[in-house]
Length: 373
Image 1 (tube, one colour):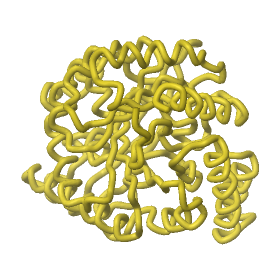
Image 2 (cartoon, helix red, strand yellow):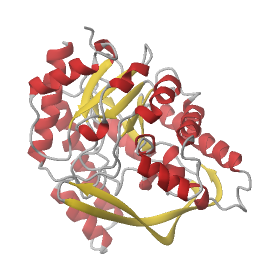
Image 3 (tube, one colour):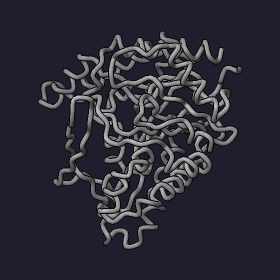
């Protein structure tokens, strides 16, 4: 079995990592005006250096900044696109966990001007990350996929005076993303991940009903999203690997959606022009591996078998058995291993400790080495 020299790697991770206490305290002090933006950024810089070294020390071949400068995995990016703004209206997302229900409230968004890229979003953040990774480690940038700009509010969030024809909205959105991809590649990015909960959510009949009720075409929405992602990455340079990550919600160890990948699988795996798929597979909510039969040669599947939602460490033997199960549907050579999601998709983080996070990442590296060499 060959060692992968290009992303995604045999042992990889999704992106977000638990924020250290000192960083959380600095964010609070910045919010109250006790420190200025430069002081906060210096604290972020120090925390990112430490977490980059941690990723190297456990044996990972890629490193992110843990998304330490963000409040959430997606909205920090989306609100920096020209034409997108938060509104006074609040939306509630209902999350669930083993203990019951947990509600998350945030501002709704409005598309009230033409979508455009007014800056290289996270450009400075990536440049700093690139400067602190070791030469043998690949700096990885994570951003929300174009789908997430639409999924949050659907057609109702788009001002009809700005976009009387929704096709122009989609064209502008993909063009903005294509420009973002070009710019980060120019900065030296060789590993870009498009995080996309929508393509996993759409497997859940309850989520499709919500979209239908608000006037969207839930039965075909995934096809539109696939086309727009493809348009966004069509002109990426040959040296830039692009992956996507899909999960069913990740907020304080809770989730939103359930269901296997069956509804989207055939179109997703055969048509989405990414290099690899990070797939949540840590429990029964994600279904079985049968949908992987649609994965074509040349595509990589990163099995998210290690949960980030609790600290209990998985059995290495159990992980190997599950990898063997997946290999019944897609060749072992096309498989890799990762956690099922980030450890801290929002600033609050999941309910596990830093040491437990490190142990899970180390387990992934050790298991991958034993499976693939």
